Image 1 (cartoon, rainbow, N blue to C red):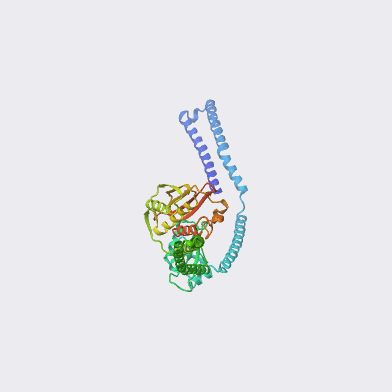
Image 2 (cartoon, rainbow, N blue to C red):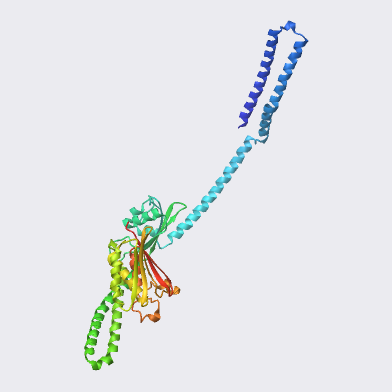
Length: 454
């Protein structure tokens, strides 16, 4: 309540008091004039008149004490604490001036920090940009501008307009919808084969505090070309070696058969030709696995389809059993998710390697359980055996190329050390995940997650 309103209210109270006393006196005067007449006024009248006025005066004093006087006191108290008008405006002007100086200081610091970050980002060799939820570019460094030939920032452009790549656009939409860090490996904005083609490892980081997104494109062209050269070399080398090796293996077996007919040479030369035969087979298997691994790495498109896994897995278990006539392995199945959305040929290769591994590393007697189930948006496949297991210190290396869990038994257990590496690459091609858990001498479990059909 302002001082002016309090003063007006106090004046109204005093006016009401004066009007009340005047009305009361007029009422008493008229009452006695009509009832007794002024000429009949005596001692009794004046006693009653004075008593009546005394009562009303007492009520008036009580009214002033409990209502009028506190209001007047409040008004005086407020007036005593009110600053002069000129002093109030000087304080306001001084406060505004200080706020203006503080604001300019903060703005200056912000511009300096902004300049530091701009210089830092412009010095990067990797393209970097910041965009909003509408995919409009808010900032881009010089490398990004040079990559996409952005002349200036006079107008705001969208990522789709700048990059002109729908696959990248879909990746950005996914990053915005999930609001999590997303990664795209070995991506090229140029779909045409070109010797100057660039490949990028792209990451999008959500900046949740300001509802924006940071996109960093790391140039991996040299690594991609080196991997490509390695893959081409392995493929070409394996292909060229496999042909003469196959011929050599065939000729060795022919000589072995001819020598077996001559019993004089059989005892002396049979061990030699058995070694030649076994090692040529191992070399042929090695180069076949190398070709298979290279083929998986170079494969771009998958022919995914819905497949019923029960006949596939049970059939492969029976077929591979022929290679291990001295072993009695018991298989149990629980297909709670009987259908997977995968590439048939690649999935078959995965199961061949995993089931064959179970046969290899189980003893004469053993159990293998294969189960499938639905976990969120994925189908989970688990293969568990009660074999020799894997030492804990070697679990992190089992998917490496040519790695064998028990080096001392490499000659006893046939294999090239590429089977699990092939499995891992096939699972990754399906955008899936594979992990292994094992306890030495108690058994091993391989767990694979395949994305469900979208």
